[in-house]
Length: 101
Image (cartoon, rainbow, N blue to C red; front, side, top):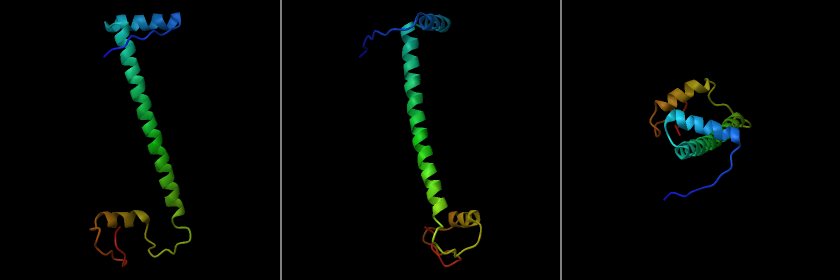
């Protein structure tokens, strides 16, 4: 279903719209439809990106706070430990006596 919508545009914007539609050999209506789809799509993507960034920021903050009040039982760099965990079966014991989780 297609609905007709009446909108108001400043003269300058309408002139730009018509010029662009003419250049692309499409109707004014098609250009407005494509523009709205593009805008709404980008807005949804931007919102999703903001949510991801917020989750990452919270995760990083939790990682920074993780060692507080905990005894260090492995003094190797975290990257070395991560590499070892990635290469280990989840149920297998790690060399330090721990279990990968």
